[in-house]
Image (cartoon, rainbow, N blue to C red; front, side):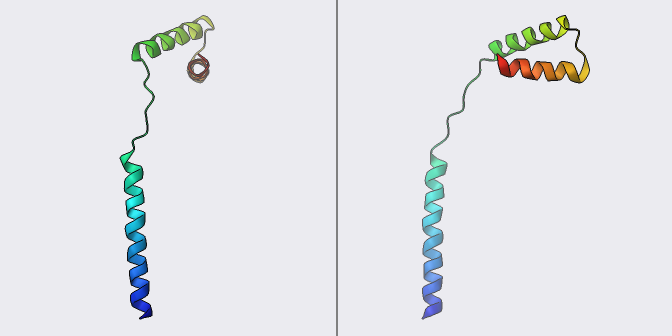
Length: 71
């Protein structure tokens, strides 16, 4: 009797939790859209600034990364 109750409770628990996961998956999270042209223009501007500072290698990549985050 105890084993069948345990099996039933486990099966019911799995069924309920599966339904909860299905509900979460049914609602997609919105993905922010980025205008590719604006991003490319921003990147080009950051590279021009890096050129003006005569940056190369790691310093140039780090500057570009920080510049893209700041703008």
